[in-house]
Length: 182
Image 1 (spheres, rainbow, N blue to C red):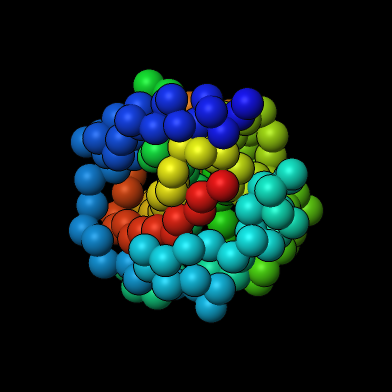
Image 2 (cartoon, rainbow, N blue to C red):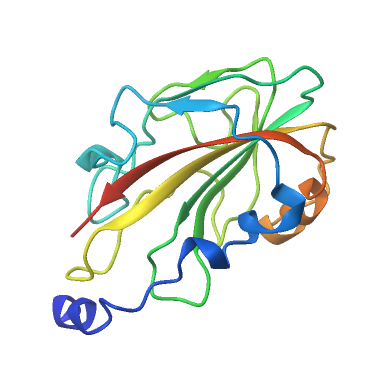
């Protein structure tokens, strides 16, 4: 039944242009290189990274290079631009200390050193892997890394409030895209 629904909705996708991350407050040079030992840019994510019920829900290892001088905080956002909703769905939103330039596999979870998570669109904190509707086709999951020019206080508790606090303070950005299909 869900595969039938997925096929019926196959042409309906949010699109990157509807992302709050494409707004003017996030304009910055694409000078950060984001990579993973688990997948290549544009390639499929491993099944272990897929969300509960589809895989093991283990965040893939990530690495970034090119944070500019003046970076006081790193913002990591994982979103799905192909979800059949009015805007992309944010799966994971984390603030990371600028002294870190990578996260190990499985480390995107509350309690990990140097990371603070806010409630993402699905109502959780921490990593939530891909779990697209079966039959909907491949979804693109973007792993965004933003260099932020100021420390962000603990007050934003959800993604919308955090993005508002970061908007206009982005020094540089980078993205790695993985795909997943059920």
